[in-house]
Amino acid sequence: MDIHIFHTNDVHSHLHNYKKQMQYVKGKRAEYGHRMIYVDIGDHVDRAHPYTESTLGKANVALLDEAGCDVATIGNNEGITLPKETLIHLYDDADFDVVCVNLRDVDTGELVFKPYTVKEIDGVRIGFIAATVEFTPFYLAEGFLVEGAFQYLEHYLAELEKITDCIVVMSHLGMYDEERIAETFPCVDVILGAHTHHHYLDGYEYADTLISAAGRYGEYTGHVTLSFEDKTINAKRATLIETDMLVGVEENYYQIGKSMLEKTIVVERANPIVRNLYRISEFTYVLMQMLKQFTETDVALINSGLVADAFEGGTLTQFDLHRILPHSINAVSVEITGRELKEIYSVANQHEYKDRIINGLGFRGDIFGCFLMDGLDVVESERKFFVGGELVEDSKMYTIGTLDMYTFGRIFPQFKNAKKEYMMPEFLRDIVYKYKEML
Figure 1 (cartoon, rainbow, N blue to C red):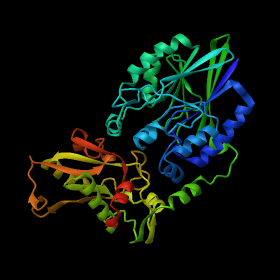
Figure 2: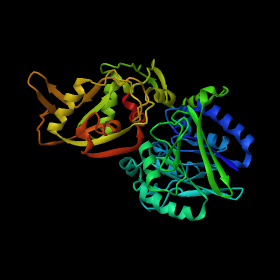
Figure 3: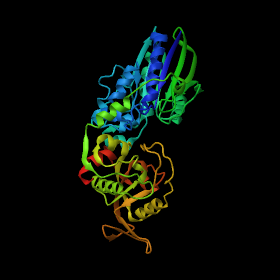
Figure 4: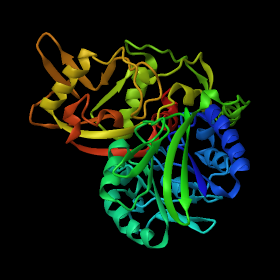
């Protein structure tokens, strides 16, 4: 007997692709009937899409339902880009199971979702268990505990092994942890991977475990075939179906989201917003003032490429604000020494990233642009630095309001181990809306 598992991951609200995937998966359901299971491995939600933004992810859940999803887990885009209560209730109306072993409420320590589910097909019991990536500081800022994925996997796999004939791990931990899971837990038969946007055209065996992953943005749909004799697996196969090869479909999700967002007016008579990648503009100057006020810091640091689109002026709607600042980026307050502040200025002033096309880290634009700073005055000829009119002292502590995407240590090592406060769940566009009178 063959059982077919279809899987998607990291769709990131590329809903034109997902519409084709939906049609394909529903067709396969008609072909395979009850011997088919469809699962999603997280990051289906991405608030860069107007339909997702206007519904705070509820539209994505409805689409998963329409596709006949049986089991889903969350990725970091569900976990840390939605307000806490929104995530807790995101799947209230879903007809599928949501599983995750390592997402707990910080106040109660209780699991937000159940750790696993078991699907029985013609007497064969298949367990589905999931874990999501441990972006601990961001989850803590939202009120969640997320660390300990492997410890919780070990605990619940011990339970699952006793009541199932086959175990599938839905991993939103990334490709390297998938191999670690295979090595650590020999009871696991299949790992369906996500998070690092990797894909395997025909899957691969690692430590006797079949690993499959379907890339990103709905470019592929995964298909795992499990062959059973009685209740024992005697063959496992994986393949990917390329979305570009599927029959095209019509969809208007973008227009629906646009219409919903246009109903909210931010400013009646707003000034034009220009897109200057290599110098400061009126809008980016005001954005830094807003950022300093929101984070209550001495200095603001952003990059000019945050402005993803221009605005001609006039009535500024929530849709306009969304297309100008589509990013899943939060503000952060960082405490640094005067010496580190000078080092950050020097690195920023080199503009090493100004022409780079950036993907990930919450950035949803294209070209990074130049770094811009406000609140730090510099007399270059004398190499003197001033904050609030006072000379910067190397050993004195200062605060800088900036973006979470800078704090991973790649651009500014000074931020990595500094004291930080992540300001969740507001995105930059929410901060602009909060201080809209400054526009």
